[in-house]
Image 1 (cartoon, rainbow, N blue to C red):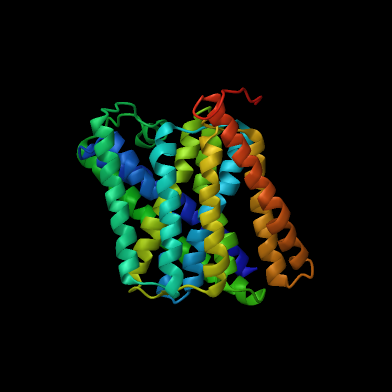
Image 2: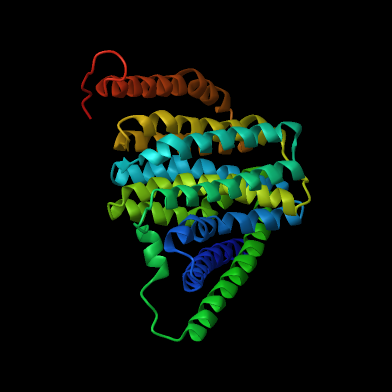
Amino acid sequence: MIAALLFVLGLAFMVFGADLLVRGASRLAVMLGVTPLVVGLTVVAFGTSAPEFAVSFKSAMIGQAGVAIGNVIGSNIFNILFILGLSALVTPLVVASQLIRFDVPLMVAVSLAAWLMASDGTYGLLDGAILFGGLLSYIAYMIYISRRQRVAKVDPEVAELIGEQDPRSPAVRGLIYTGMVALGLGLLGLGSNWLVDSAITFARWFNVSEDVIGLTIIAIGTSLPEVVTSVVASLKNERDIAVGNVVGSNLFNLMGVLGCTALLAGGDLQVSSQVLWFDLPVMVAVAVVTLPIFFSYGIIRRWEGGLLLAYYFAYTLYLIMDVTGNAGLSPFRAAMLYFAIPLTVLTLVVVMINDLRRRGMIGPATTLNE
């Protein structure tokens, strides 16, 4: 009961702390002369991954690499399968051309790179440096492109975080915003301690590995800010934000959270064989499957959202059956490998080919009923 209470309180502290951190840092940055556009590409993007970073860093520092790595992998799987799936069920999501051309292929490439880096069983200092260097390059490129295209429109999410013009003096505002940042960081630190400690207690109580705890309950908990942001954006018909938030969060999780954690942990993040040969390949496959879904018509339709959601439940069910030693695991694995997955791939390929034909890019143009 105490562990459950600490888990809930830790999660609440982290969500509230992340919100305070992002709001305070965003307003402080704008007050210091940083443009809202750059704030959106840096401060807000970092802020949405703050819970993942706090948990992964805390876990790595106490030698719980399974929780640290599982949190990142599980969050990325959860973001695409559950959050995008749920958001698309609310309303079909629009996929911006920038995402299709650059961000999604980059997400696939970074996911594959993270898997290859783990092939020696460890995320070392060089791996962390490459990932974090990639993040800095990505941010610099996004700022360059945004300024080159002279994008004046500010993301509604960023505008809301910055808030209305504060009539108070700069000194008072600076003090308030700095206090928000400090309090947010404090809540994140305290919440991550409680969350990780309670998760380890759960793992020992239920006799499961830290990997599974990180891949499931911690990954879901630290992804709650993304759930709220994407679902609310889809309800407000800001459908491109819902997709961009997930893709951006996945990139920051891999390059920022995993990269920084490997660096700060001294390059000694051990990767279990279960994660290396099952969970990382699933993360890569989930990233790859977004390409035909995003590419077809530039819209994630409701049936595609339902498909993503169904696969998340199937993945979670597999983990539970594996942990409990359920006798139905082998038939379930066979059904997924030899029927469900091939049928899904075939369906997505057919949809993508029909879309290419509709656009006149291959063969005669046809019309596909949506």
